[in-house]
Image (cartoon, rainbow, N blue to C red; front, side, top):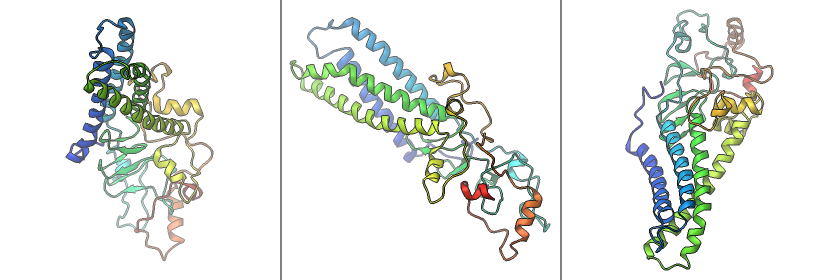
Length: 323
């Protein structure tokens, strides 16, 4: 498990989570006290039926958002198993024998420049495709998207759905609050009310609009990544000096299922995560898989001047596919 060897709840990691909860609490308090309950109004029973509908919808969205938040924070994103085929115990990487030993493991498309499988010296494990080491979590995370300080966790294979739904419901909440509370804010300019209530309304609306704009941009970017079968790390690699030729694109529907799960009617609920083990993925087109024992031996023997024990840089793009 990715949580096993990490100390997540340090002060610096807790602070962003508390900040997020504080923003949620301020917006919720402003909406409930100043809009739904209407404590600033002289007529307490004004718009009772409309407020009831808005209360049901808004609180349902808040509950869904908080469930997604808890699941995104508490769910292990997934790590490389401790089995022999990933730890390399079935064959020595630097044994006494002059023959290079390659442990038996599932085929990998993302390899080093010399054709060797990617190996993490900190975790002492081989890396499957789309796996990367997180220095904050101190673990190799399966299908790592990025490390998110706002949830004090990595976004990976097992919690990517909850993170995406968290952003989605947060954005929907901001939109609903902004639309439904807009009339109350405009009315506060003409009504006689306490200065504290007027400030709370304007402050709550401003905070909602700012967060809605940021979340909308973030949601749009991650929705596009999901539709393209890309993670944030893979997008950054694709935008670097080399062009990534390994594609995990299975088509729009399958790309979404790979993140939101196999059951379409549960896509918008924080249940039913994607199926699979996070170790192997569909690869679009014909690409070179992990090289055989003979191929590695031929590659190493063709370059005697190079030290075969030296660590080669990792490549997951066009150069890796061409090996």
